[in-house]
Length: 289
Image (cartoon, rainbow, N blue to C red; front, side, top):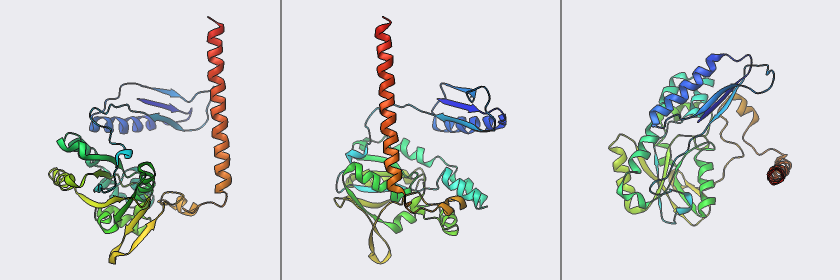
């Protein structure tokens, strides 16, 4: 489902570009566009050339929900090759390395999912996750929190799964590859099927390797060259992949606690307002019966 709004001075070409991109992905992924709307941004007049909107999709897990809560100590962690998506594309464009953009244009993530979801050993796959914004460093910490576990990761194995051109780009512009979306698939599975998964994905030309295992440390432990082991924590922000982001930095702001309190207060007020509206509507319905 798609909902797109254009401001008064917006170039309709933006709409065409937007819809072309969405429909291309829909066709490639086999997910039909079923509903939506295209409108001018609400109000009598909205000056500017903004384009705003959103996309949503609904699916059904027919066999098994591969949720993070299923992860067990001793599970192996596999990762497929990653070349990134929008984040890497943005990095390439902003840094003048346009030739790297084409590396991101593939469907290997979806192909890997389609293969694994049809395998008889699906019950021995605990969870599948994508390496998204915040990068592997951030995702692993988030997964640990939900699974109530820890992980030990071999950094060199992860590095070998990053598209070489993408990795070179990130190194040249000073971006930590562990802190950006790689468009790779993380697979938490029983040790008994890890090699079979790697073999099955290799058969459709998708590189996959074991990058670590689940332990009970409640930390993300990274093993570097020469067996050096470090506990790594997520940064306040994802790796800064454009000049503007680099100026802002990745460090925790001095006003972080004050910001958190204001966000919490605002969220609470929003929930209170939401409940007042619900109560009001229910009361009106009863009164009007």
